[in-house]
Image (cartoon, rainbow, N blue to C red; front, side):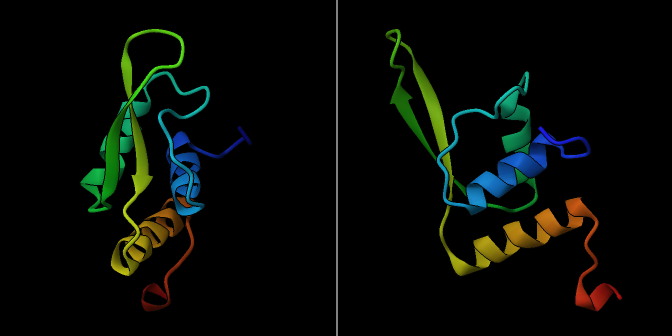
Length: 89
């Protein structure tokens, strides 16, 4: 992870790139970051998948691919990165 980049930013960038995430690398509790994303009105598609190494399951998350949801995610990412929106300037 680059210095100054939060796990929340990493997760949002991955979701916006179309990745399916079950965790965030090196994060101790990925679920808290996904919960924060959802609290900001960003819809995630969550599917339970079987684990490869044992009989358990894990949640795989992806961004719900609607224009409104993608824009909401981009705007939240820009806010986290400190990028000013045109209306804010």
